[in-house]
Each structure stands twice: as C-alpha cells, then as structure tokens.
Length: 169
Image: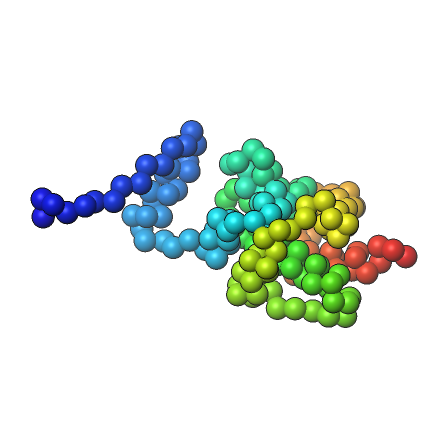
C-alpha cells in the first residue's frame, strides 16, 4: 500500500464553472458526450467546428450567429449539442459538394468521427469552407431572432442544404 503510485492530474483554469463542471461529472460518473470527445480530436476540422458551433467559455470559439442568435442555441450550456449539429451540417455539406448534390451520407456518431479523422488537414480558407460560412452568414441575416417559430436541428440542416442548392442561381 505504501509503495502504490497514485496518478494525479492538475487542471489549471481561470473559469471556476469549468472546474465545477468537471468535478460534478467526475463525481457523478457522467461520461463525456460524443461531441465533447470530438472537441479534443486533433486537426483543423475540430477547430472549424469549435469556432462555428461555439464554445463560448473559450473566447476564440464564440459560435456562428446563425446557431446562437437565429436558432437561439446555447453552446455554452448544451454539452456539445450545438457543435454536434454544426459538425453534422458540415459533414453533409462537404460530402454533397464533393460527391454531387444528390448524394447524402450518414451523420451518425461513427460517420462524424470518421470525417474528423479523414480531414485532419482541413483547409479553413478553402472555397467550399468559405461557401458554407457565407451560407450561414446569409441565413443569420435572413432569420432574425424571435421572428419565427423555434428552429430545430433538422430545420437548420434543410435550410443550409436548400440555400446551397439555390446559391448559384
């Protein structure tokens, strides 16, 4: 017993809520969600999803206005659901752009995980990436907060894909 090694992890942060959240999850045995695990994946696609989907407790990840204002989502309080929706939209969008607009792909957890790993070298400045951001910008401009019924995840997916189909016309 006296010779046993005890692993210790020191976590440094200025955000007391982050420490409390970690403590509660560890003590309650609440596992990380699939998206919370993805947030730790390596690569540029992870950074793109964090920036677009939002992780407001980290200033460089505010989240796109479409998700935050137009949809009224709260990425700082939803355990990654906003980022998961963002990742699912991105996976569908980029797969359709690469394979044809009539081609759909799975957006289940395994498919999204695979996309993250297959796109470690994701180009944040690529034409397709800029197109997706421009579509989100346009949707945020058109769909003002409080002027519509609450948008759900599948509504957002359909809106992005519809605007993508109409974008060049």
